[in-house]
Amino acid sequence: MQRVFSGIQPSGIPTLGNYLGAIRHWVPMMNTHECIYCVVDLHAITQPFDPATLAVQTREMAAALMACGVAPERCVLFVQSHVHAHARLAWIFNCVARIGWLNRMTQFKDKAGKDRENAGAGLYVYPNLMAADILAYHATRVPVGEDQKQHLELANDIAQKFNHDFGEEFFPSIEPIIQGVAARVMSLRDGTKKMSKSDPSDQARINLTDDADTIALKIRRAKTDAEPLPSELAGLEGRAEAKNLVGIMASITDRQPQEVLREHAGQGFGTFKGALTDVLVSHLGPIQQEMRRLLADPAAVDAGLRLGAEKASAIAEPIVCRAEKLVGFLPRS
Image (cartoon, rainbow, N blue to C red; front, side, top):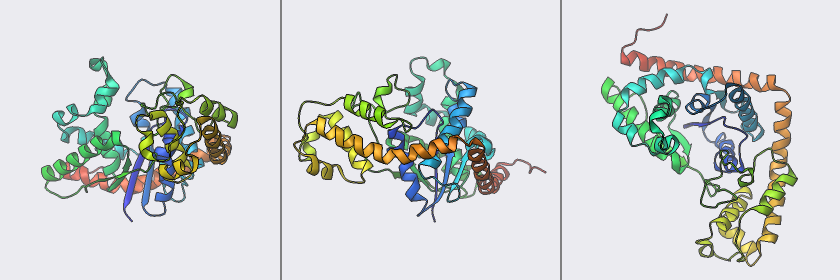
């Protein structure tokens, strides 16, 4: 089996966008790949954070993953900071990566904004840590969205330069797994922006913990237009909000957008939103129930994460020790 690595930041309760764009795809991959899934708390501290909140959100994210079907007994599920190999390899990669490469990373520019000089150094070298996350396990496949493809290309550049500098084809090439139809779920208030936990309006997103009434209210208030749904995809051009709701319906029901349009062509959004609400409430209800059960027993969640960290360390430790030997570090006693 090919080895897959994927990580998710503990930045709050996952949204419907996180679920449809990433988490949901992690579950079937456990049948076809050797999967290593990580709550990336080291990445989370590259921007302003509250320590107490970080601890709570890390456990919440792990519980959400488990509730969505990411079963610790079928994969490796752990917290990034619990496996020290990540930080050790990241430092080596900080020394391998070139400043010019990092200067081209558009995500740093986006996240740092205009006050770039006051951004933490960790945010700048974030892509090096991401490369270490993957390559510490010799993973060769990574599920990514469009916004992460540049970081994956950098990870391959780092791997190739390490291999060249230290005279051994040690780190493998990484290939992206681009997710399916709803890989990019957009805001319910602005169809041109990605659904985000950081959006100031809670009405812009569906949280995995939203109850049925809250989901119904948010979908009812979701921005749309006055035109009915078309029968063909071409009819969604220039209609970002309509396209987003059709994409959500397609993904949650495992269909293509064209199939959704064939079923709902000619309907106004009042009718369509009702159908979408019913599907979302039915699908997310069991996940919410399981997440509540898990969070009521935090010791069980933590035990699963400890087991995952042990399994992750067993894979990463010999790989990173070999990398350290190639660099010239003395072996630890």
